[in-house]
Figure (cartoon, rainbow, N blue to C red):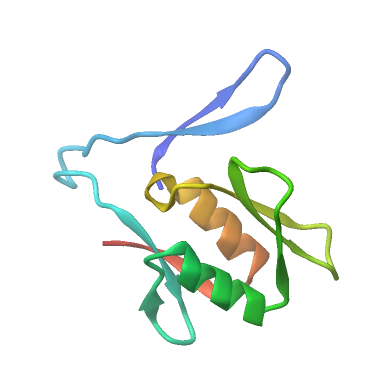
Length: 108
């Protein structure tokens, strides 16, 4: 994950990811979400939903523009774009952080 941390006017920081490759790396590599126990690359929301469900996550249907999952035992909410092709590394890292040792983000 590379980019620049930017502070907006109200003091909130966010990462603006760089999409171009640098001279050392060549072209930018695509990130993939990997389910660690099976070493499987998650290639669809259907597969991701099955894995998250087995880990105790429940699907929320409140927002038609997002795919959302909540775990009853926590305050965590995973919000993802409806279109799997718009899934970015920030979404993948959100899944990783909320499911320790179950997922990794890797360069393809």
